Structures are given as C-alpha cells and as structure tokens.
Length: 192
Image 1: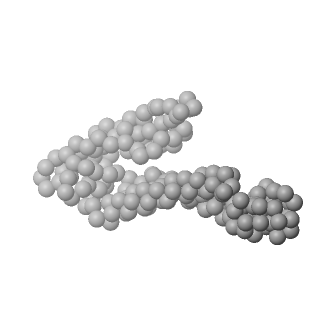
Image 2 (image 1 turned 90 degrees about the vertical axis):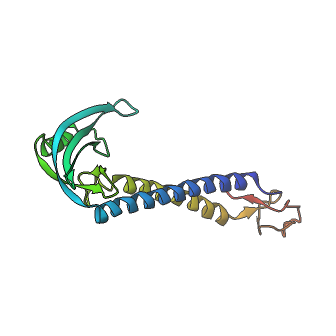
C-alpha cells in the first residue's frame, strides 16, 4: 500500500506545478500580446483631455493610486475619444502625481491604436515597467509556483525509505526488508 504522506506530497506538488505552468502560459500570452501591440499597432498623436489621480485601497486598506486619462486623436479623418487608465496602482502618491503632470490636460503624446478597431488604444507603449507589468508579474509567480512544485516532487522522491520494524534503509517497491524480513507493504517509511 503506498505511503499516504508521499501521495499527499505528490498531489500538492502537482497542484503547485500545474498552477505555475498555467501562470507561465498566461504570462507568455499577455507578453506576446504586449509585444504585438508594440510592434504592429500604428502610432497617432493624441491630446490628453482628462487627467486625474484616483485613489483606491489595497486588501489591507493601504491607499493605492492610479491615473485615469482620456485621449482625443484622429485616425483616417475620424475623431476618437478614448478613456484609459494606468495598468497598475501604487502606494506612492508622489510617483503617480508625477505621471499625472507628464500627462497633464492639453499635452500631446504618441499612442498606439488597434488598426482593426481604432477606438482601442494604448498609451505609454514601450519597453517599460508599466507596459510589461502584468506579463512580468505572472511570469515571476509562475516560476515560483512551478519551482516549488518541482522541488517538492524531487525532494520527496529522493528521500530514503526506512523499514517500519527495524529502522534500516530499504529499497522502494520491495515487499520485505532485507535486514529483518518484515513486510514493507510496497513501501517503507520516508526519512523525515
């Protein structure tokens, strides 16, 4: 009969590894999406018509700040008004205030718009923290989860087994202890 501790560890390890792989896949998808925007969406000059620092709260009640914006731009003679916001929040009011000053009402900035739907746009596109925040965060979390899962699988598999009767090391999947001939029920006891 298999050791329950080993089976439980295997299940936990597989859950961690699976969550890690899923997070890595989502990070790859979102990273590829951001890269596609960066490389294939056309650029237009847009004017900021609304800029406001907004406050929310984290799960722990910490004030978090973001930036709500609205841009006006023209594509193929048609005018678009697109509301947007920063893809992240920060506890630093000063840094978000500085970003709001850079995107003050009346300033002009390059934006990228979806050629299939010009009303969909992105600002602050580039190789920067804000633009690649989500893929980097998900990728980091995926690596941690997958790493924990694979570590648990490897560390549990490498643990020597001991006979429950005499305490001597035994070989996995033997039926009897070579030292005292006690039945092993298919497995010995893992060394803690």
